[in-house]
Image (cartoon, helix red, strand yellow):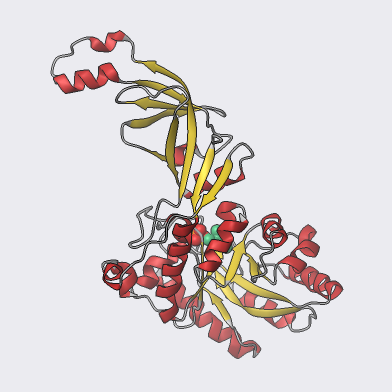
Length: 370
Ligand SMILES: *Cc1c(COP(=O)(O)O)cnc(C)c1O
């Protein structure tokens, strides 16, 4: 098999999507499956759809085009505000986009008229993430000006929390988004069909009992793909955290120099022997391939450093054999970079579907409570 490679277990992605869809549905919240972390990989996108996600979202039109070319016909939302230079690619491939600029919406309107279709717009508001979004008054203003534009329709509003600040979305801000939907409806007379309440960082509050009335959509990437809360990096109960495994090859191994045999006062026999058997290994995987700081290692290995093309590991036990493979669990940023690296093969497979009894499901408290 090729190394380096990323092994993808589609079953786990499908099951994660299914569980999130099932526990958010009773709250009236639908899930947009966000594919930017896997560069719009079509089979992974399909696993999300098979898990019950009905809409996909990606930040880049190139990823969306990749999914369309592979035959994916589900609705796709562009979750980054469109580039003016790309509107003619966006309109035919994405039915909806998240927006913050009236000039861009005008350009989308012109592109949609040229293409003879209607493009749906979700206006994004700033709720303390300091990244993207309109103030509530600017949003009302754009909503009103949009009524004069052909080719675009205002489908709703949304917000993005915690991406930049890394702070837990305050429940107050989520309630504020919910109230803003009602205000815009009243002031502009347009129904806000979609109130897109955020990303994986919002899950914990919503599953923990925060109930902003109007929020009816979440855009989930990390929770589906890695089964983790992006803020705490803790596993979400009931979700698989090992759908992705990065595999790379050992290209050099050295034992520690014999100086470590020296008996230092206070060190136990086992510490000494651990030091004796320790060493250093070079892995053919570097910063050009992934975020090497975002990898977790099997027991007995620690990261010593990295270069563009090497990862240097300390081995606590016997040295790794040259030519053998080492497995890593990637963080979201490590995954994103690995999936877009030209040197890393992506190998998808399906594990045998586990039949989960309802009693097993009950043990997953967080998902049950929802
Ligand atoms: C990346 C992104 C998401 C998904 O975030 P996750 O933390 O992966 O769930 C949602 N919305 C927007 C606008 C994004 O850029």
